[in-house]
Every structure is written in C-alpha cells, then in structure tokens.
Image (cartoon, rainbow, N blue to C red; front, side):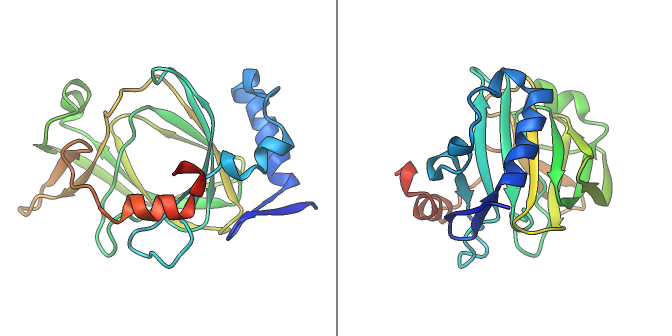
Length: 221
C-alpha cells in the first residue's frame, strides 16, 4: 500500500483514493476525469478543520471539496475523520447543514446523535434566519454508520458526530443536493428545557477558529 503524509496527522493512501474514485464514478461521474492521484495527495486540495476546544490537536477532520456547484446546486466533498465533531465541549451543540445530503461511508465508520425537528418542521424551511424555540424534537443517540452504508441528512436534521471508529482512516463522500446560502445553524438549551434554534448568522463567532484554521492551512492565508 502506498502511503503519503500530506500534512501532520494527515496520511493518505491508494486504498482511500481508489474507494473515492469508485464512489465518484457512481454518484458524481462527471468529476472522475479530474480526480487524479496527484490532486488527491496535493496539500492544497485539503482543508484541515481545527477543534477549538482542543487546540493542541492538529484537526478533527480534513475536507476535500471536489465539486462546489454555484449557487449551491451540488456540492461533493470528501471527509477524512480523525476525531468527533463536538462543537461545545461537555454539552450538546447539534448543527444542521445548508443542503440535504447523503454521506456515503467508504472506510471506517462513525456514530452520531440525531435530532429530528418535529412540530416546527415547516418553520425551519420557510424562515431559517430567525431565532426561535423548537416545538418538538426526536433524539436518537449513537446511530452507527459503517463502511458501505449511507447516511441521509435533510434540512431539518441536526446532528453531532460523537465517535470515530477508525481515526485517521474513516473516509466519507458527501453528495449534497440543492441548498440555501447561510441556511443553517445549531441548537442549544434555551434554559427552560426547550431547545432554541440559533441561525449561523446570529450565532457568536468563536474568535479562536479562524487563527487556528489559517495556522493549519497556510495555503488559505
């Protein structure tokens, strides 16, 4: 097996590349011709996402945007997972995404907690930029997704990745459908037992994130 160290703690190999290439052939065949080994192992292809709660760790996941459709027509990206995506250490902070997507698990696996909005489903679709109390929620904890499985996330699904089964080698392909610019946010405790939806535009910007992001990714400076 050929292994290439692209950045600290980011090690890629030919098995990952072949699995990603095969998945693109099935879900985004128009991208196959430009998806080469040289592009796969290029440092500039990857963005390392830091964990602000654990700044000594190199990253919690690495992202490779293979296709970024304009405006949000289709996004296709690879995620290589090193550790869970827990955005507030010690307390849940589930987030949603600006587009519905299917995550195809290519290697390894992960567990997630899923929060499905119930009573307020229409409101989150119609008015995603206002803070409001969530009227109903169904929580499913520890949902397992392993290699060969597919994880569908719609606009009203909030989630947190809580465990990585094979750190550094858990690889997934995100195939994202038509989305909405800025149409995402997170849930937090409203103080009275209810969850409150906080749109990304209204949330507090963690001032630690950007410096760490640029430190991990000099090509983004």
